[in-house]
Amino acid sequence: MSMIASARAWLNHRRTMSQLRGLSNEALEDIGLTRYDVTHTFGSRTSR
Image 1 (cartoon, rainbow, N blue to C red):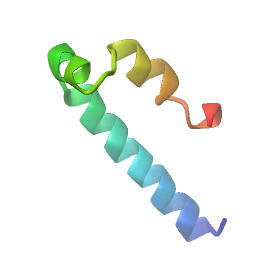
Image 2: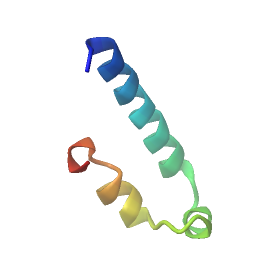
Image 3: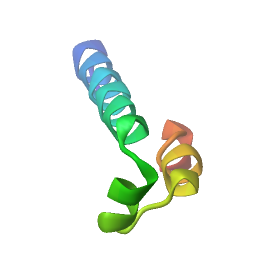
Image 4: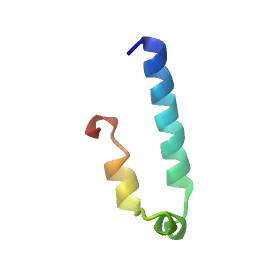
């Protein structure tokens, strides 16, 4: 992966995490997620 592609992927991940963290617990529940899912499953890019 090129440096530019890596930077774009990193920025996209940060943007997505910011949006997910901004949702209420109720909104997360509506889409089938919990606060734990956001921080532990999606929070670390190395877990993929």
